[in-house]
Amino acid sequence: MKPSTPVAAITLMTIVVAVLLQTHCVRGQTQAFDLAKLLPKTGTEPIWAVIDRNLPQVQELVTAARMECIQKLQLPRDQRPLVKVANPSEKEKCLVECVLKKIKLMDADNKLNVGQVEKLTSLVTQDNKMAIAVSSSMAQACSRGISSKNPCEVAHLFNQCISRQLERNNVKLVW
Image 1 (cartoon, rainbow, N blue to C red):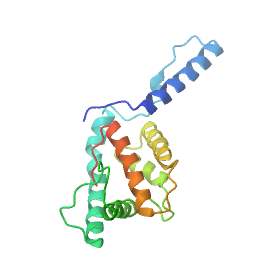
Image 2 (image 1 turned 30 degrees about the vertical axis):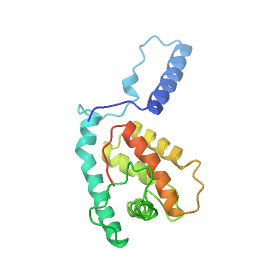
Image 3 (image 1 turned 90 degrees about the vertical axis):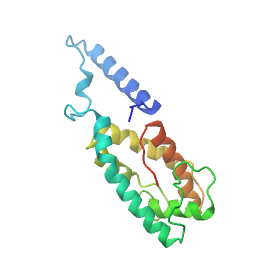
């Protein structure tokens, strides 16, 4: 997996660096500012290697939920993955709802569970605080503006937003 930097991460990092550099300059400190002190200590292993190693655990969780939901909704076992499907059938939208609820990304009130997004991101990135903050921000952005009362439609809209975020960050997850 090749790393790509999401615009949100660049913007966030730009703001953080600008504020910290201004603070550093205003205080008149003579030591050089070390940006590395802000980033989490993950050892010498690149974050993309950590993600590649840990993502299969989350994929197993998603696949198990998907298979249960396919059976529950009496869909064909070879049901197409729905991550990037723009116009799924109503039954496929309900499959997405079932999967998102089984893995607790969508709660009983049909809202995106930001806490679960953070938990799964922590699992995949070995508690990388920057990745958790970015994924939390993206999840909150996905939640804004969705006003449908139909849980299957809400799940479809979440699915569209989540899949765009995964694609932008080169994360390969299928449901």
